[in-house]
Structure formats: C-alpha cells, structure tokens
Image 1 (tube, rainbow, N blue to C red):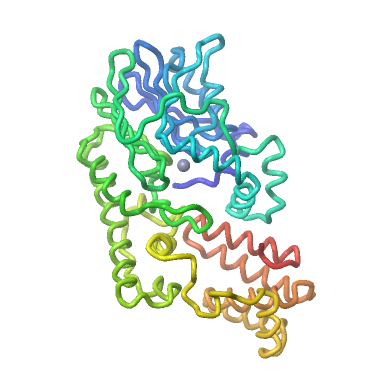
Image 2: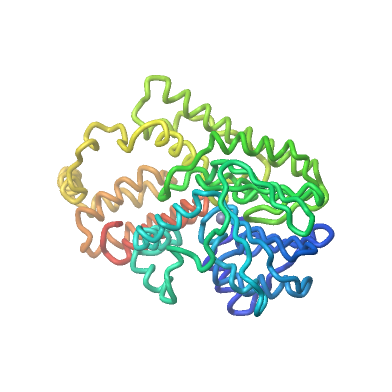
Length: 417
Ligand SMILES: [Zn+2]
C-alpha cells in the first residue's frame, strides 16, 4: 500500500505509529516507513541503502539501533529524491567519522537542479498533497527539503560499481527508470536485492504529471536484469519487503516489466498510427488487466504513464491546433461561458455530469466556469464539489491529490494555478 507522506509523518510525530524493523536475513534489517531503508551490518560498519524522509529518519535510525550499534561505514542513495537522500545525519553515531556516500553521478545534478528550482518544487509538492501553492509555506516552515542535503555523495559512478565493505560485496548498477540517477543494488552473499524505486509495490511511478521525464523503456530492461539475479530477499523503495521467497520476487519483477512494456508498446503504436491529437491516445490504449495488488494504480496511474511516453517521443504541444499559441484561459472561458448561458449554467451542468459519473466532461466545464467567474457565489462551491467528488473516485493517489488541489482552489474562489 502506498502511503501519503504527510499522513505518515503526522502519525509518527504524534506517537501513534512506530517504525517497524524487519530482520530480512542475518545482520540485515529493513524499515518501510513511507520509503524503505535497508541496513547491512558488516565487520567494518553499516552499509545503509537510502535514508528516508528527513523528518522520519530520526525515528527509523532509533528503531535500527535496537538491533545494531555499528557505526555507518557507507550510505548508498538509490536516487536523489527527498524521501531517499536527505536523512543520513541521525543514523551516525556520536563522534564517528563521516561515512562514504555513494550515488550515481547524476544525483549531484539533481541536487543542483533542486537548488535552482526550489520554489517551483515546493509548489509542485504542495499540489501533489492536495493543497494550494500557499500550502508550501506551512509545509516547509522548518526549511525546504529542496537543494543540497547535508551529506552529498563522496563517491560517484557511471555504469556499475562494486563496493567491498567488511569483506562483503555490494554490486551497484545504474539504470534510468523513475529517474535518470537511479541505482539498484545486489548483495550476492546475502541474496538481498535493493531495487530503489524500480519496485514500489504498486503501478510504477513512470507517469507523474508534474515531474520531469520518466524512462519506462529502460525501466523494463532494469527489472529483467534484477529478476536474473534470482534474489531471495527484496527490500523495495516503498512498501513491504519480500523475505525468503525468490519466486515471488521474480514474479513481481517480471510481471511489472511486462505491464510497463504493454503500456509503452501500445502508446508507441498509437503514435505511429498517424500521431492523432495527443489527448485522445489515452482513450485508445488497451490498459493491461492486473489482479496483483502490487501493480495496482495506488500511487501513479497507467494513463499518466502513457502521457509520459507521448511526451518523451514528442514535444510539449497538446496536439490541438488552438493550443499551439493559446488565448489566456480566462478569455477563452468567458467566450465559452457567454455562449453557454453563463458561468453558472456551465457549473450547474458540470455538477449534473459529475452526478452521472461523467467526471472527465464535468471537469472541462467546471474549469471553464471557475476561470470565467471565480468570484461568483454559486460557481466556486459547485466546482469545489465536482473536484471533491472526482478526488473521491480517483484510483491513484496522484490523481486524487491533484483533484483535491483543484477543489482547494475552488474553495478559495480562484482558478487553479
Ligand atoms: Zn521514493
């Protein structure tokens, strides 16, 4: 089950939820608290794979300390996202020397990008958690997570790297997937695979509507390479581990690859079939059926994965001629509203459509209504209701939260921004 980060942080800080450490195999521990952290105890100290969200890391570190008092020798960041690379400090023992920090060479470029686009990323995250952009001010009042972490990488690599710590071998491999800076790690002596966010116990996060390009094609290859390791234990980027079950691990990796491949191939076939206006492609794709809970669209949505493929192989243009050089939204909305009997009539029709379950059409009319008359007494509440209802029925957390964000703007009587 993919968690909501804000809810997890609130529950842990209020003391109503404790981190649970799983002993995966001898001297190997895993803690799934929003994101997963793995600790390999060796004779030279701990090898940590990821560190969790900055605010959860002290709780995870404390939980690990019930099992091991070894200093941290090396930390590996599977990628530079805020829930993986920003929490190292609390794991370090007092007075210990600084650990090695190992990551793919593109992780540092990500940190530089975050520093350059801090406010933008804060706004994206505020919307991703269902709020208006102003929510960012309260989310980050103790400091923004976007920028350089306290412990940036000390060792970078490009393709593959073997680390030997305390006489044990850790094999790092780079592949693009959710990000361009990803590492997956295999520890052959303990048969433990740490796939980072290549495996999150849900539909892969390959389509995220607000974020930079994802790489589903390379993701497929990486999943198959991981499956070939025949790991006995899986410690994923998010979700519960798989302990002592090689068949379940292989099945999960291979079926996730097949699922992604079906989406990519269908999207490419639609593009090759005369490249119809892009937005219609999402209706023409055959979405693969799955009964596996660990492939369900709990976080990302297969429709967004298709959009990500379209963007990767095309440009930013939506494919509608008018949207090549569009009018301002408010100007277009005013035209549509005056033709349709006014913004109130559009909003009322949007509610009718939403009541009938026609949420896609309802959304278009609701947008026009709010953009045409944001201050209107009846329009904004109607639009708020349309998007609140749409959020309720959304399958993926990403869609749900963006619709909640749309509802928040309507509640504020202003168009989405
Ligand atoms: Zn993650």
